[in-house]
Amino acid sequence: MSTPTEESGTADRAGRRPTIKAVAAAAGVSTAAVSQAFNDKGRLSSTTRRRILDTALELGWSPSAPAAALRSARTRTLALVVRRPTDVLGADPHFSELITGIEGELAPRGYGLLLHLVAGAQEENVLYERLAAEGRVDGAVLTDARAVDPRPALLARLGLPAVLLGAPDRAAAVPSVGLGQQGAGVEEVVAHLLQLGHRRIAYVAGPEELQHTRLRHGAFDAALREAGVRPVAVLHTDFSEVSAVAATVALLDTADRPTAIVYANDSMAVCGMGAAQRAGLRVPRDLSVVGYDNLPLGRWLHPRLTTVDQQVQRVGAAAARVLLARCGEDVEAEPLNDRPRLVVRESTGPVPRRPPS
Image 1: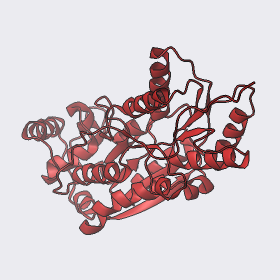
Image 2 (image 1 turned 180 degrees about the horizontal axis):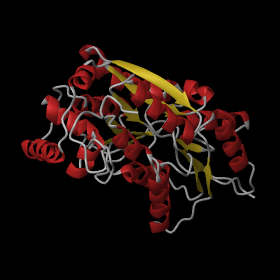
Image 3 (image 1 turned 135 degrees about the vertical axis):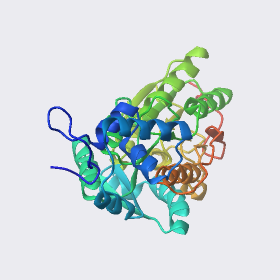
């Protein structure tokens, strides 16, 4: 069955007509780039556009008029697919901040954002295939970059423009947008806690398969090791309130409990602070707590949360601009030259003194 992007051309020796996918493969580009070359849109270099056109001529392929008309009818809608349970998404302001940044770029240009929640990898991949086949969106924002991530290659194969949220990665099949030096913020956290005298430090991390979990965990271990300190524990969670509380309770219910706990995001840090206070501990007098994200809720607490600022809104806005440019809009991409930085507030303090025996 032909698709709107499999257009006319001279049949090969086997009787098959060349397709846009064949042109893209031969030219070493995506099908979206082939479309942009023929529509004279997007941000292709003159060299790339010339190579695509020459390849199409050599293969005997050209876009059909009906297909070109169909492609020109943009939906002006971009997809944001989030692999999270609905209760976790609703309780995590991170995505509210991210969406605010994205919408700040889309709304003035008449674009909308289509949000989908999925439970697993297979469901997410099927969704992208359906969105592309039905022509419901012009592009997609990929969240939660993973150590082994088939989505960029899938989106490139589908010819659907995409941008991946995560540390910059030139090897990715689609552009990735995020602050560089992901481990720098964690290194600052460890240095801050060590300076306060803490040596029993634990880390409540996110899922192991996520790229940022591995980067930050590695930075945490390396910074402690350089100081000759071993972590009390590293516990992985699914970012939910239940797992954050359970991890905190487990850490505090040990004979030699940590004097400081670092959490992978602010939402879990807030849950951890509550669990500690219910156990009769005072923050930061008995336990120092550090989050990650620098979300507004961290400033509303008492004590206010020490955290790492990764500029969530700005990253969302930058990702939207990159994706809009890939969709053919005349938009300049905003460079993200900064890195995550520690924001010290009131939830961290000197290591507690041991009571006299």
